Amino acid sequence: MRMAVVGTGYVGLVSGVCFANLGHAVLCVDKDREKIDMLNAGEIPIYEPGLQAIVQANREAERLAFTTDLADAVGRSDLVILAVGTPSLPNGEADLGYIAQAALEVGEAMNDYKIVIVKSTVPVGTNEKIRAILSRASAYPFDVVSVPEFLREGSAVQDTLQPDRIVIGADSHEAASIVTELHRPLTDQIFVTDIRSAEMIKYASNAFLATKISFINEIANICEKVGADVTQVAAGMGRDRRIGPSFLSAGIGYGGSCFPKDTQALIQIAGNVDYDFKLLKSVVDVNRDQRNNVIRKMESFIGDLSGRTIAVWGLAFKPNTDDVREAPSLDIIAELIQRGAIVRAYDPVATDNFRKAYDHPKIVWCADALTVVDGADALCLLTEWPEFAEADLERIGERMKQAVLFDGRNVFRKERLEEAHFRYYSIGRPHLN
Ligand code: NAD
Image (tube, rainbow, N blue to C red; front, top):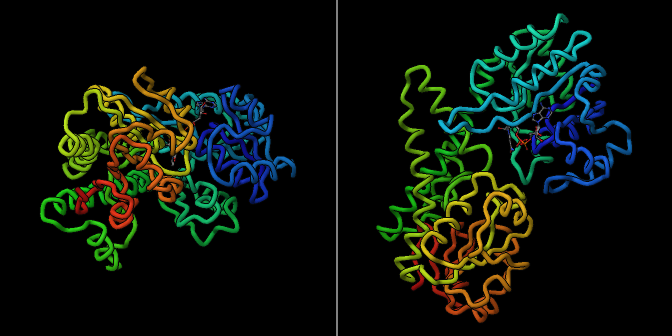
């Protein structure tokens, strides 16, 4: 099939490329000319493992192209996928401005029957609003189908080519079967439902995962007080198949472009129908506190942070991505600076994005995991990049003013730090003072 993907970001680019890989002819559209120029020059604007090779292979096979010309791309396609951003408004609601504008432009460009797939995460009822925008802009027939996206940054290509499920929300059997065909050979994973349920599945899934994280973080905080070890607790809990082992890693909380905004949006969606989603509000509060906990812990173990040098390992909201949207590092570093600390920071790929989001004269940007610790009063691990787990701790300790590690992701075993003569503080596990 021929398709246009509108919005060539983390979701649009990966889905477009993966559909090309399934054999479809894909035109990826973005209004950001710089992004499209980079892609046309063979460069990938985001860091995503495995993406470069699959983009190159599908461009060479002439199944994939990039353009800023939305009208032309829509005119040449049977299907249009909307994958533009739906960021948070200041009140937490999803900002539907980008998707409304994209829908309008698609409607104006329609020249025949089209299926419009909504992949962006949108509040319940939005697909109907998109249908209304398309109807006003176009006299041609069309169907709107909700296909929410579940890929995870860092493993986006693999998640798209080997998904747990593909949710198709449709109110037309014909459109649902065309969209099912589009996903061949991944049809075993398909779950067809109505449009409103599909929209809700996406929010409910992210809210549930966020709940699991905040739950284990609260258990971790209690473990610290009662002398239990949260990694042991999580391992024991995870053996129960009703619970499962995933998303039970205690730490400094979730971040990224999805969980924070989607939890806030679901609280608003509930509020708009007079439902007070108390549980999810607590999940959000716990997550916010968890970032502050690490600062409190530093103060209680190394004292006043003013004038202290704190080395930071990791800025991305999780490993294997350069995305820093809503990353815990943003709040934690800003708070360290607020308290008078000097920050030395290093991330393997996310430094440029972090500096665009937040920069300060008191941050020293460092080029590797070793030099970043030079003269530091403490090292604080915020993102669990594999290279940190593999670091030579003896050498690290020698370069620091004092060998102190705050491990915000429970990456290390206490015994390893004991051998390297570190004081070690992690989340929900016994300290090494
Ligand atoms: P993004 O910000 O990386 O990309 C969005 C792109 O859309 C940008 O490049 C922007 O220039 C482009 N755009 C906006 N309006 C346009 C228009 N009218 N015409 C052409 N291009 C336009 O966003 P993302 O992270 O890819 O997220 C997209 C959607 O997918 C969001 O709703 C998000 O919640 C959802 N989602 C994201 C992830 C993730 O891990 N990033 C996972 C699942 C779902």
